[in-house]
Every structure is written in structure tokens, then in C-alpha cells.
Image (cartoon, rainbow, N blue to C red; front, side, top):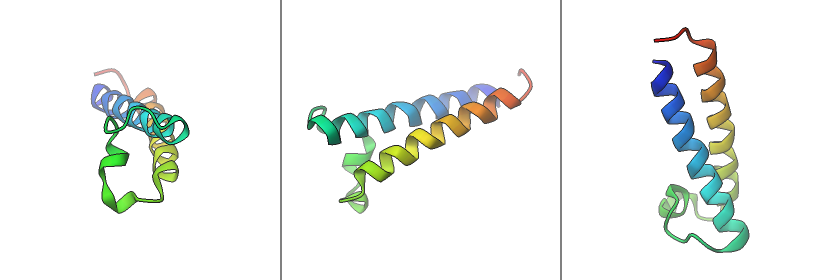
Length: 68
């Protein structure tokens, strides 16, 4: 379970970072999940920040779990 939480946290971290990089620089178009979801049009920065917060929460949950 700890590995699954870490993996999900890593994916959320990467997607959140890609979303922010795209919104700030305009580069990496099409790489992130946030840009591909039409529902999030206009809310890409908020969704990216939410993914980063989710990533840290998942890492904290994984750290609190026992090994295995």
C-alpha cells in the first residue's frame, strides 16, 4: 500500500508541476493531464496547485504507513 501511495503521489506531483510550467511559460503543451481535460478550462492553475497539494498529502500518508 505504501508503494501505491508513493506512486500516485509521484504522478500527481509530476502532473501538477507540468501544469504549472505550461501555464507560466506556455511550453510543454499537451504533456499534462490538466490541459487535456476540457472541464478545467480557465482553472488550470488551480487544478495544478491542487495536484501538488494532493501529491504532498499522498507522500505524507505513505510515510505514515508501515513498510510493506
